[in-house]
Length: 121
Image (cartoon, rainbow, N blue to C red; front, side, top):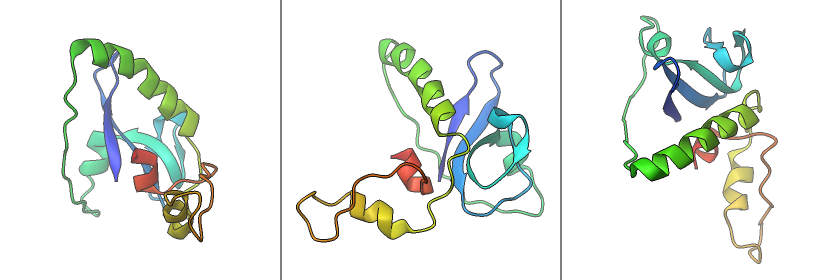
C-alpha cells in the first residue's frame, strides 16, 4: 500500500511506500539508495518493471483549492520525516496501538518502524 505523490516543482509522480523486502527501486528522497522500509520511488519506474507485478487501485483525494494549498507542504514534510523508517516486522504491534488504551493488549503507537497501511493511515 502506498501513496502517489506529484512533485509540485517537476510534475513527476512518485510512490511513497513502506516495503518489507528490498527490491531494486531507488529511493529518490535518500539520494538513490536501494533499501526496504519507507521510501519515495519513481512511480513510472515501479510500474514499468517486466519482472514484477502489482495490483493497482487508485483512490483520489478530493479537496478544495484552499485545503490543497494548506496540505501540500505538510505532505512533503511528512514524507521527509518518515523516509528510511524501517518496515514494521510485527503487524500485531500496529493493531494493538489502535485499541482503546484501557483494553487488554494495548500498546502505545510506535512510529520507529511502520507497516505500509500504518504509514498511509
